[in-house]
Image 1 (cartoon, rainbow, N blue to C red):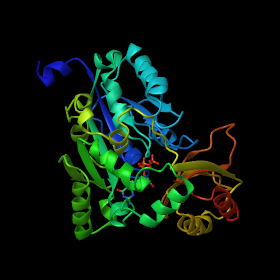
Image 2 (image 1 turned 120 degrees about the vertical axis):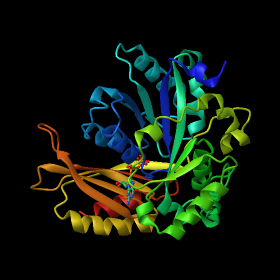
Image 3 (image 1 turned 135 degrees about the vertical axis):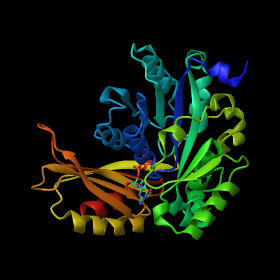
Length: 354
Ligand SMILES: Nc1nc2c(ncn2[C@@H]2O[C@H](COP(=O)(O)OP(=O)(O)OP(=O)(O)O)[C@@H](O)[C@H]2O)c(=O)[nH]1
């Protein structure tokens, strides 16, 4: 049977992966607003105890995806909760009378896509859904800045604290694993680097993988729906040949975890001078090498909440929606870093900014 024939009648699912802050949610938001009439169900998985991505996407009011079609998986990284969380969610979705035309899954920035894609081979899922393709979003500016290059000092420092650390830099390894799974690589944030920087990023990304998936460039995740949702690969049949570092190191099937990374939520009162707060927050992020920080702030006198998004020490902010009636105003920020990040010091430093 040909691949096309085997896929006939199945709902296509696109897996969108990429490191923390690469631009996955931004790309999906753009997709929902330009979905060419397709009805999309969205499964979102996030690292950290604040559902920021789901909130951002629910607020975008796109017709392609109503609030009930946005499902958040919050019990940890999707690659570790396949059996307990992902499969039951898919089963429920497939039992709905009004099935979607396409399913889009946003993995957390720390997820290995391989176990998720392999789950589409489970009998109950395989007969109904196929993986149209895995799209890996790359933060071109972060690659150009050497974020994923092996930082030997850091790895050595981690090893001192963890004798079991059996591989190279966790960032580098995860970056490669997410690229290895890709059918399409989107080099995003091209507005932040020049042409020669972009050429180096292309070369570096290509050097990390043995296959040659298509690479396209984008800014603000602006990629046409016809490209993102029409790959037609059936990746569940190929994923066994795209092994992650973990799978290659532990063929015996040992579980992997995300112990190399840590996250916590900082709760603060109102922020009366957001410009000063954000300016000084950049210093805290740089000093403690915070990888990602995001959340909402309460600014006195403003009817809307302020969305704060930091990727490294680059910070975006905008008022995203009005505080709802009865909703407790407050500032909540999720902070993600490597596991040697000093949580108490970061908490104290952020709290001191208010
Ligand atoms: N300058 C610039 N900023 C971008 C671009 N794409 C996304 N961003 C910004 O980068 C930040 C992170 O974007 P998200 O879309 O939330 O990234 P993500 O991959 O979903 O992040 P996680 O879910 O936390 O892993 C936001 O502040 C975006 O506005 C881009 O092409 N250029």
